Length: 348
Image 1 (tube, rainbow, N blue to C red):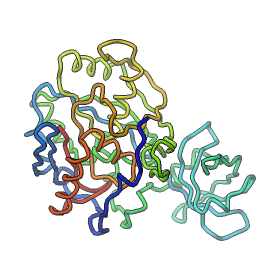
Image 2: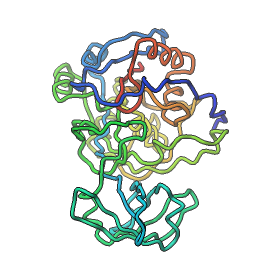
Image 3: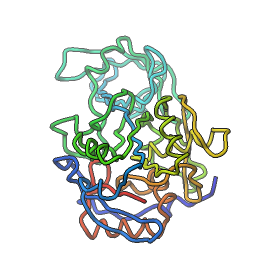
């Protein structure tokens, strides 16, 4: 892995640029177009996406669905609230979680997990404490977690969503993420239908967004950052269509950094040459930094990302530092909305 200073991926963003609510309709968000070859930057709206795609393009979408992973709990016999974020289901009763404040959850601590608007209450216990600061917690009624959990919106979003489906893509299907694949939030059923009519092929893959995606890089040297594994699945039908696009030299457009990571992961583990991929499932901790040689991805649709995030690092690896820096400066000049509920860019 190349060595980079995390500070090289920092930038200043006034808080008023952080989107607090989604644009309505979904496809009325702004769309910036970055051309990696001409170095030109253009401005449009997401509903004009068909103007920048062509017949034969392959659009790759992540059909993961966000689960109600944010829980409220209290230590048995005490009143102070504890926030719990479900990270990964280990078995039918145990989950790996993040807790705030975590110092209150010592080994063996007994908890009551509840939701004030519901009558349900779950008993829980801290089974172990991991080196990375996460906890393994046993829940006695895990079937009730979806009833008492809340949508895990990012901490920089202060407003409560009136419609929680706006933090799901319109094509979300497979439960498992703790954050939305936000590049896909701009699509509407009508826009997807129009793209199909003009001959754009669409395939669905699954990568559950977990701690690995949203965990900021805190190490000074990026090579010391621990990239947590995330589950992926690629069906035979999707892999066949992707291989056809590779064979026919058609453009493969990843919608979101999660799609790029899955595509590049399965291409990297493939033993054939040229890089044809195979269906399967597993976990990936692929950490893409500048200097990475992309194997099959030609274009990327993505949002504007947090400083020092692995998402920003991947996007810079794809677009190039100079072009991406200019894009972010133009985004601020043109009042683009940043982060999860913000505007988007197409890098071609």
